[in-house]
Amino acid sequence: MTFQLSILAIDREIYKGQAQALTVPSQTGELQVLADHVPLITLLKEGNLVLKKENAEEQTIPIAGGVLEVKTNPPTGGEVVALVSF
Image 1 (cartoon, rainbow, N blue to C red):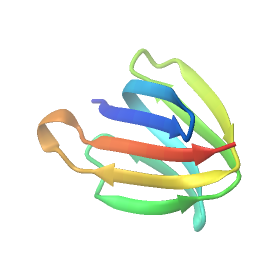
Image 2 (cartoon, rainbow, N blue to C red; image 1 turned 180 degrees about the horizontal axis):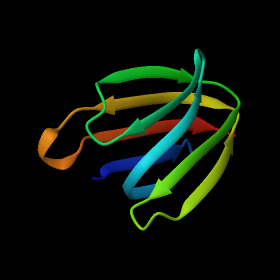
Image 3 (cartoon, rainbow, N blue to C red; image 1 turned 135 degrees about the horizontal axis):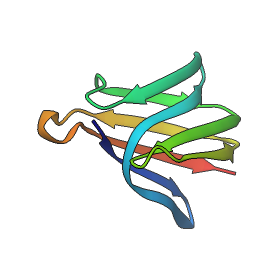
Image 4 (cartoon, rainbow, N blue to C red; image 1 turned 180 degrees about the vertical axis):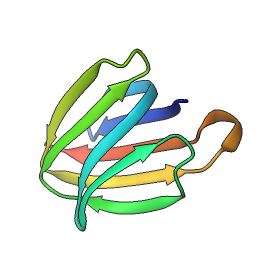
């Protein structure tokens, strides 16, 4: 199952599409988001976002920090938005 993911910087869209998983460096430790994750807002710290796309291809994106919001929407697997800085 997948979820809708948007990774945005202040000046551009980094990724928008379906994802199987997103692993992020949160302020409280590493966190992995999957489809139907509980609603969540958390601060991100410096580290790597690891995106597992719908086709299982992985992409690593280094960030300096940001904010992650997970919204629940059962029919679609949910929506995740990461606002990041570099």
